[in-house]
Image (tube, rainbow, N blue to C red; front, side, top):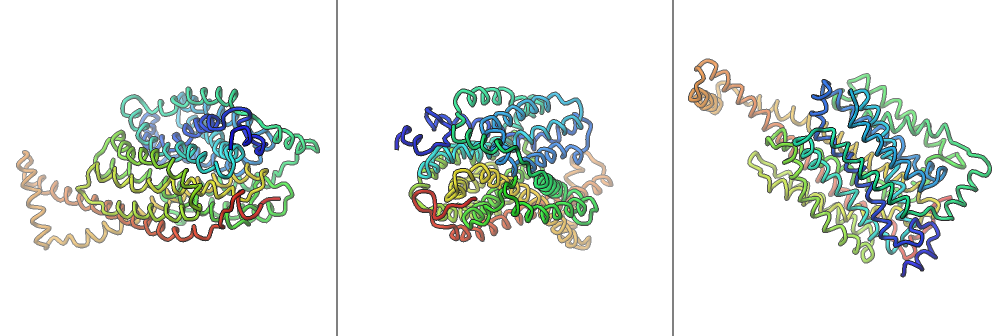
Length: 535
């Protein structure tokens, strides 16, 4: 199909009379910046805390504030796009994200940085849904796989590049640069979008019709969804540090979140013009796609955080080197993404998803072969095996989620599928962090219980360590105390290593269990699906 014919049958296209593939590249630029920033701050958190004289717990609000703000705006971005205008709303999001990034770099204290991160999250949260909606409307169902493959390079590769770039900038310059680099990228994106992206006449007419009778805002729905997602994000991010439901802080926020969800769902179902179109979940295809996207978010974001953390705390890697360990996975994804996009037109999405989940399980299981002698190559290959599956998940899931939807539903579907990915990422990070802490304690208790002073192995270890310390000039009495300390440190390291193995094994089991779930997706027919969903 030529570009001209595509434009005739796709009146909602954002490309206008321009090459749609060029437009796809343009709108992917800002996404790369936004997704990159989601992961880039993780490796610089200790540096930020040190510069601003804050504790690590206080500095984690730099991450939490962004996630909460993004979680609030994501579900309603489809409605905002339809009211403000898709192109206008998208450019407003990019401008807000870019300006707040510069403000983050200039923040004089932690409070100001957190406020600017909230603004950054509000801008970043609305970008991806708008972009995916543009892609879904610009390309035919047969072209969407390749289009989302191009877009997926930004969404999937950026979290892999983020820790590497963030570590390098932090080690060689300062943490301020992880925000400053967004300035030129954001300005370039705004310039290109202004001149390359079109607001189609169909959307302009729909917006005028919507506003002709006066703007009706679902304020109750807006408040409920903001409270529900915002407080849930706080629970997921702070749960482990606050000891979960042993903390009144966590209990309060969790109760508020559940109450808001309980009120929000029936309220939105009853609305003629809901701010969040949750009736889309009545479609088995969309509901299953959302669940699978949550799983992808959990696998991607949890492992992206776990591996650099393991390398820095357990193997003494620098922030830059730990980020570089993720790079092979990013390179492989870059190569595999076009292949997965081409297969999207030849193989039904449900089979690609099942294959991708099975491959993800294999990658996680390989990582569970972790040992104290694991080298850089082991972690590089582990990341490759984990991430080679992601293109076979992201592309078919994204394509399948739009199959059968009415054209006017793409904006709202985009916001929900992106909310699912981010929520899955938060759940994955929270669950992995909790499991890691709990199992570290369990393994340490078991190992310590077997360190009986009467044990010959224990006595030999103490004697060997004492001898080594005395040979380095330490007196015998402090050397013996130091030897016991070294054994305790070794036990702690081994307990942590065993806990990481447990986490990787559990992630593998979850991926294997989800693989057959994809088969329950509705069979995709030519023309976009078996049924039209939406009201």
